[in-house]
Image (cartoon, rainbow, N blue to C red; front, side, top):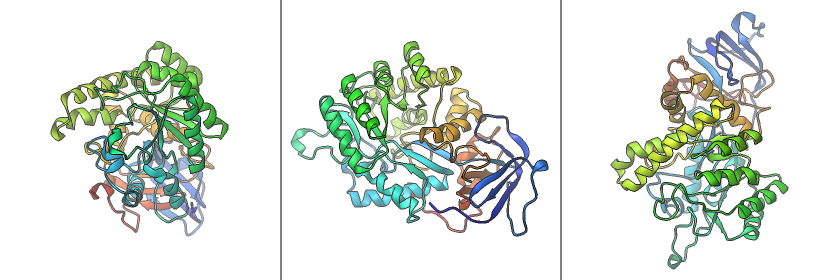
Length: 431
């Protein structure tokens, strides 16, 4: 990905640097050739050379670019599970994924980790973004996902004769788990996404207390993935599924919904980040009746919302790490609403805005394995920055409103916001 040349300063705002430290009032950030050279009080800032580009924060907030830690670029207006794999052909999915990547960047997300992608589109989307073919967040790819036969992601009956190959690799036993990972190695992914447990979306077959993979399968996946320098994550709601994942050596946990004391102890011992994705559950409960969602499914989402909220609160209070993001692209939880996750954690879970921003920036970069490059506003880091005309300590919801963005910088380039010269298509309007 290209890096800007020249000097830029951002001033006249407060700085939330992503480390969890208290905001710095009257702050300035200096950028040289796409990297941060100063971040701190404006009074202590060094002189800048003539010709420097100046960005006025308008009394708002300067913060790191956000990281969407559970990103599905190939999900579009999904109303039922079947929509995930048979709604569109791969050609249209690729175009829509590119539009969603542009949208994510315009929403202030300068980086994202895929949580699974149809047809391995995210592998090629990452290449296109890095080559400058299409704008989007710095991406970590995951490709197709792995699930046990008959598990949550295996819903097409055999009589349809269409399989699930575009979305998920189905396995029976440890050897098939190893083979699935080897297929993903050839595909060029960085993360292996698995489904150790079910979900409220399938209350009659694979609900959120059901296991969809055995420990032996999960351990075989981790051994094989780590041998090839890939990381492993998993959709883990059921308590035993969470503990199986932690014992198997998973690198992150998606959701971590029903976490007991033993699971929390295991989590903290290994310092494994969790991405709760609670806004999806909240949106399911609130909007489910409007789209005809069965009451049993809504009730399940309410249970996972309550359990996930309590688990997330316990994790952070115990010193664990949380990433922000999850499952956008459903009819009731569309792309473009990413920052609602941050608002939910402030308004409903009780986190402070500074804590939530740390989760959405530094921890997100740590999850991607790139914390030395971005995620905090610090000298030497890439100038992936967001400038918002709001005091986020008192108005975290401003991150949901793109009209409030003065500038979204990526590698020093102004990619979006009011100062950008090129508008970006809103993928949420594409159906």
